[in-house]
Length: 399
Image (tube, rainbow, N blue to C red; front, side):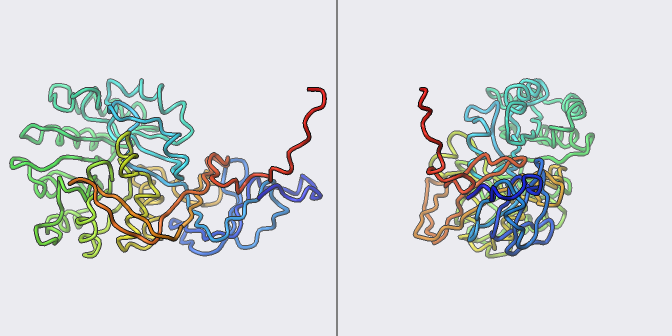
């Protein structure tokens, strides 16, 4: 740890927190190397080599660890869905300081979502507004009468600070109505659309990606067996490359049934890496599959992606996708949202899903050691920012 030298005059300790000696990966600012990171007043104050510990009130030695911007999870579930979870308990211990609820609320339920979840959360929580007015409550994603592009656009226009896009998902009918209405709402408000639709014969995947989605729109669950991007010979289907060339984005959305090692390994080996890394975090996916950001990043690392690429797609790229470039980077004066990650070595089993749960052996696992949110240490797995127990004052004799 810890507290800076008390002989130093307090007025000279201009930094609140100093993270010393870690490998800083900040793709937005083209930084990858050993640097110190200092914060002040809830913002990034300085990223530089050899910042004096005497200048900080609290110092944490993070040598041998990786320091990144706070992770940005584009696909999680905090409202509406039966498996919704509260963000802070499941995001902050995993280095995730920003998360997007993917369609839990629609235009009729967003205000309640804001009051119950967004406002009280320490995590930055944004929303993709479901084209279904009730969101994911019950089974309204099947009710075409409740899918209104104009009312959805009106709610987005009311809260552009919190609503960053539109979500269309799970429709079981034969037509394109939900998707086209969602695209219309997104077009009218200048936001992107995320889609989760398994293909059926009247709604083939290629047609959706090449004839309906716009550049910047996003297909989530990109490595899912339910919407396979590879054929029976494990080759990525041409339509996916064509869609990428058109500017369609592809998001991991790990989930409890949407990440297949067989598909992901083949796709990554053929150069089809995801544009963004996300968890589809909910009550089921955080259990068997451990659908957290560090675990999802670990799986991509094991499958051959380079760590800086993974970090970029877990920080800066999703921040840009949601229109919040103040996040996902360690630029001076930006919010001091930081993840400290430990790349542990050993023998690990990583679990996928889709056709049961199969294991992929790996020799590295990414673990979150510390999370800093707006300059405050909100998670410190091994007490790196804390004083040693021996500094505890004596018991008050009057008690």
